[in-house]
Image (cartoon, rainbow, N blue to C red; front, side, top):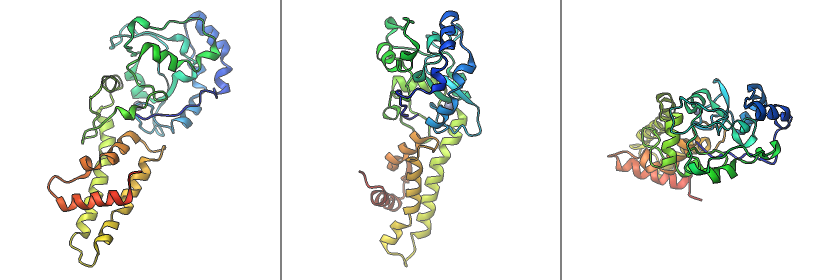
Length: 278
Ligand SMILES: [Zn+2]
């Protein structure tokens, strides 16, 4: 999960035109799926067609316009607290893009720390609701990260099997409700590390006994692999950006060999040369 910038001063016209639907929602506490679906394309662009929570590519998957604060309530919810914020069904700052797995796993879960400050609808006008999420979050202190308000990368760390470590209360919450350590995600995340590591080891095995190469030439053999990995880790279109960036930042943990000190030395020199710390 990564931070995504949304410009709240530019609410899509398609959404602001839904005032009549909003008024209906307030009266009947019911919302039409078609109303908020109008911004799906805007969210696809903003989220680079990736799930806001698990970061899988949605190119060949079902895309959900997901409500950060659930629009409905669910009495059978698996969570401690479930509560419907029906008046936010069309709020721009409450809408994110997600995959169907995260969307359905999360369901109506939305636990907050400030239970006594639970928000109710207070006749806010439609226009003001588009930007209200940050203010609501300051009051309720939700456990769920908001990709446009929080910077989840500051909290999320991974182990060498690409599983998210359960180090923080809010990290535990999102891993639990969106099942971010589910098998199909591990099957996609882990090979990113394995391929990178295997390629570096293969390069090392090709050059290690080559007497024709100077030590600088040996070092340069790693350049393309490391630069390419870094490019993908800095390209907003790549899936699993948080994981890719975490590998780079902690390359010694993820890429070093347990016994090959010569390999570790050259990898460290290559990283320092090709990805100098800014
Ligand atoms: Zn997802």
